[in-house]
Length: 242
Length: 110
Image 1 (cartoon, rainbow over the protein chains, first blue to last red):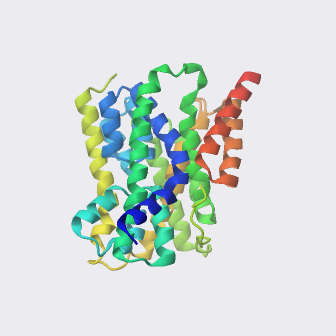
Image 2 (image 1 turned 45 degrees about the horizontal axis):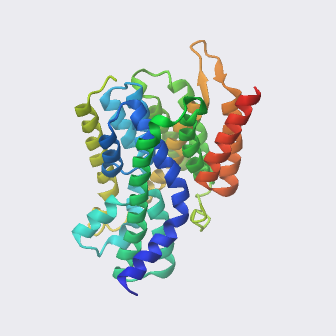
């Protein structure tokens, strides 16, 4: 198949995810301006970091005037999941040249990972299709992300404060959280991390999120190591219907 | 605002580089090490649940200095309904839309 049709197919496959990305980008743009980021800076952040959850966490901490080190460490912890995607998708990128590896890795997101791995696992396509299908999906998501952040920057000032739009941020995280809780061990980790996060919010330096996430992870690893909980059989289907 | 533009740029670049390093990690390592240790993989699979739960819960319930739990009913109800929508549909937009709708509705009634 041609480069163009492979790329177009990838873009089509990731299409349904855009419905979630657009409000996420808008909220990122709006809240970054609120927290004191410049307009250019906010759009640049979406290009340089290109990871919504960590950007929102970072923006919130900057708004709270948390210490710089805490802001950076928190965002880094939120993005630890990219290690998982990187590990899981690496076999499909192994025969790419170094520039392709860098570009493909840069464009790796929850969505492009889900779309590509589902496709590649089933079909085992050749290198050309893997490159272009993936890039078609990943870069169209990138474009929508950057543009919707920019739109958020522009409309931000005109949103009436009474709408409590800031609550859309935890709702976005909730929408990502719930599907990730579908096996027993993840459920336990989520309950522990969420439970610890409430009292941990009182920790100095805004360290609550990092402390809660690491506590949840530690409990998960200990339970996994010392008990016979069933391995989390990823029930086969990816979250492709989002 | 407590941070000047230079500091904010510094934060953006630092987080950008760390995030790129995460994304590149195994993509570049693969071939040198052929398989991700299962231990590492299992741990990484738990990261989204840990991080996202730690982001969501404190936005809905807080703890007063006295130790009492503080929760605004509109937020709790909206989050609970939105969680149900997320469970059934796994759709981000539907979750946000229903959650905000319930928040406004309950906020208007209470």
